[in-house]
Each structure stands twice: as C-alpha cells, then as structure tokens.
Amino acid sequence: MDRAVLPATTRRGRDTRAGLLEAARQVFERDGYDAARIADIAVEAGVAHGTFYAHFRSKPEVFLAVMTDLWSRLLLPVAPPEADDRSAGARPASPYDRVLDSNRHFLAGYRTHAGLFALVDEAARTAPEIDELRRRVHEDNTRRVARAIRRWQRVGIAAPDLRAADAATALVGMVGRAAYHWYVVEHRRTTRPEARTLTTLWLRALGIAVGSTPGPAVPDRGE
Image (cartoon, rainbow, N blue to C red; front, side, top):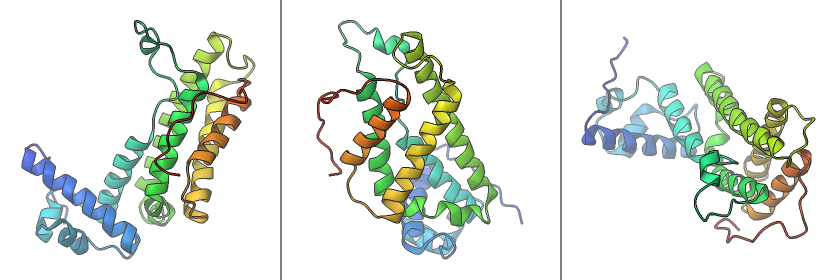
C-alpha cells in the first residue's frame, strides 16, 4: 500500500524528521544497509513505528535523505561568488587556500561518516535512486569546480588550454576516490597531510604554481 508522507510543516514535525534522520544514520552505521530495519530506526528515534511512515515511505527513502543531508554539508565551493572577492578591505584568499579549505572540510566529514559512505554501493544495488543521487552530487560539484577553473583561467592563473568541465570531472573524481580508499578501505584517522597532498595535485594539474610554503597552516581538528 502506498503511504502518504506528510510534509514537516511544523516545528515539531521538523524536529521529529530530524530525529528520525539522526536515528537512521546511527542504525545504518551500526547495522549496515541490508540489516537495518525501520522498526530499529523508530526505536532509536524514540517514536512509534507508524511515525516513521508519516515522514518516509521506505528504508531506501530515509537512506537517500540521510545521504542527501550529509553530502550537502560536505561540499564547500573552491571559489566564492565573485562579489565576495571584492568585499571592501578584504584580501582575496589564494587558490591554494580556497582549495585546501574545501578539501579539508570534505575529508574531515568523509572520515567522520566513512561508515555511511561504505554503504552507498550496497544500498545502490536495490535502490537505484541512490545511484541517481550520487550522479547528481558529482555533477553539481563538478559544475562548481568548473566555474572556479574558468575564473582562474580568465585572470591568467590556470592553464588556458584545459577544458574546464573535463578538468573538474577528473579532479572531483580524484578527491572522491582518494577519500574512499583512505577512510573506508584503510580506515585512516588523519586529514591534514591528505588534504595538502590533494590540494597540491589539484593545483599543479591546473598549471597553478604551488610554492614551498603555500599559505598559512590552519589547525586541523582531524590530525
């Protein structure tokens, strides 16, 4: 039977949905995708079993919501809107600092939630919408990176002979696969050296010079 999902239009409804998402995240990380049960998510959230269905129709749908929320929080633009660079009295950050901040933010979140990222392939076998989300996230991120590359090309920073869209696809793919290997396969606990390595590779691939002291060190919460 197709269940009608009610929109979370009240504060209480939004809080209940947020609690279900957090509970689902914990259950998926603890039990894996296949073994996770809706009943366990409801128990973890402290709500009645039927309350789950007021917000989500199925296990794939709640997993999709968990991953959508997670991916939205992991991605930082490698270059801000151009207006931000012209703020009065502001000194624009270097490409190195921009890319490093983005990579460090992404890797720190990926490391924290590596258990969820390890489940994506498992979930996609029975829920094609997970693959669609993964494709959409990759394409959205690639477009943002391509815009940054074109800006750097216009001001003479990045190599002019690169196709920005293709370069962005390659760089985004490199970061994603490296993160998977480091934090899902190897179970690494660090992010600082990995982020610096990715950033150096990133900029050199674009023809952007990276000096021996490429910007100030920033304390890393994930060392």
